[in-house]
Length: 161
Image (tube, rainbow, N blue to C red; front, top):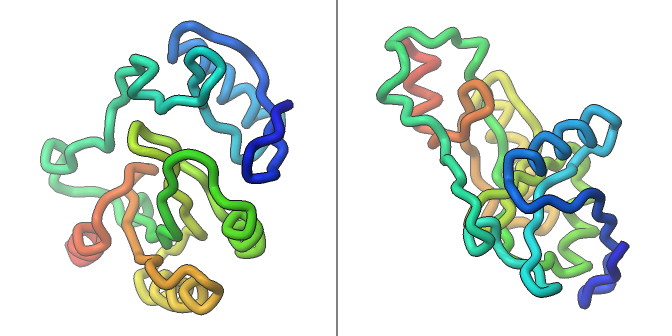
């Protein structure tokens, strides 16, 4: 347990020197009901990005290499609420929690927060407007295919095929 400069208390579990065992531990924590569990790296007692810690992260799949026909039920829309590097300010974290259904996704550049999961673009656009009115004016819609984030326009194209 560590109390951050932003006033939030964070709980950590496990200590690993390699990313793969840490990722396996994260999955176990998620299965135990710790929703929102994610990996963090530390160097000399300070939190650093996974990239700085030497983790080789893979990005989303290149959809140009996927089969031409993708089942439409694999395509979803989400609202990207924001991206943060380092600690999220307490007031912003309270707003994120207030939205409900927010999922953090950590990558080499920081943590992106996503709201909801929608089967159609219109529902995602409605949710985006609601999120924007709740204090996140830069929120925008993205698409996903099997959990991999893609631009909303690409998701639209897949839904039309």
